[in-house]
Image 1 (cartoon, each protein chain N blue to C red):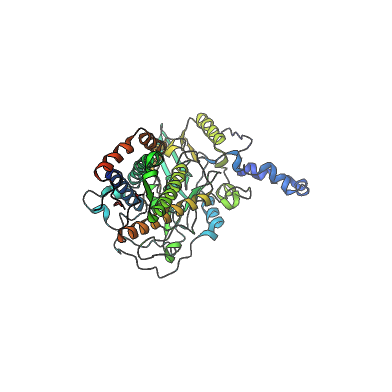
Image 2 (image 1 turned 135 degrees about the vertical axis):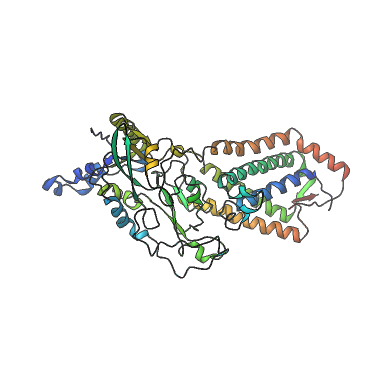
Length: 153
Length: 340
């Protein structure tokens, strides 16, 4: 593993949050029961849509915390020492799209909030498509062995 | 029983009255009449319906009217259905050969009648109950649909959009009454990965949105010879339901259920007794007390809102900088890193 120009814990928490969000996001679709995942010992919870829904929110909060830390540090110090890689820049854009569409998704779920159905449909599919693109780009970054978002200037 | 009619709520009788002005009525522009008696617009707030169960005689006119009004929306599946994997779990649901079934909810029957024979306070009651989607105020079916194929409209209708529905049936699972019903062999999944994901389209009452959009009453309300249902802004319907319940010394269902629904029942007997007496099961909803399935949404949203603010605060308080320096000292000059 190559050296990181910043703390490894940020990478680890980010990877954990993204992986957990990808998994709980997939489980928003009715797949766990159909594909027997609920019968794997310890995985019965994947078939409970409400639990999976809440976990998705909790992992989203964790990701947003990490993003907050990174953004603050970027403007305080890192931007003078680090530069985004091309694939890093692409993923920053995708994550931003996921955060915005996810935020709208959260807003939509609040009591007393009723949005236009076409808007809701757009938000859902943007979130879903960005998730798939993110998976593809992250895989490409891993294969090309340039998974870093940033490198030292 | 005394009947109250707040200004903006409309029952079938009230609606007909507007059109029964004799010959003079023929001379009045229809728009003028409609303007007086139209169903309240969405700007009046979410529309709710009130079912006065003391009036229902179980004639089934509402069921027939519902089928007639919505026939054009019923699925016409392509057969044979695609093989689905795994075959033991992903089984097609086909109601297209059983379109006449009326004793339960199906993709071709969005309204059913339940019958309850109960004895309450020494009196025998036979209660008939029209059952369909409750049109929740905060519907879990719409709020958790991963494809955005279900939405609540501003006028309080929870509506499914068949073009985007994959028929996974999550909406039926999360619905406290398990109202939506699936028809396989139709919908988007046929064009994506029919063997691996999806299983048709989910169907349920959409409160005759096409009629409401024109200011007409939903078919089940319009046809009812006993004026069982009244429709109007929810706050008025709630007031009406409470008043009616006081008058008949009765009981209300729908005020608090699942956080509040836009279908409210008033019964002369407790709903616990009705729940015991009605035929329940698949496509036959219960009358249990139901907690708010989406009650935690506010707290979860607050957590999602606070998290980035806390992260930014932590960053400015030196959390990241401190960690950065730690790595900077030990790994200075090295570039590249390893992340997903």
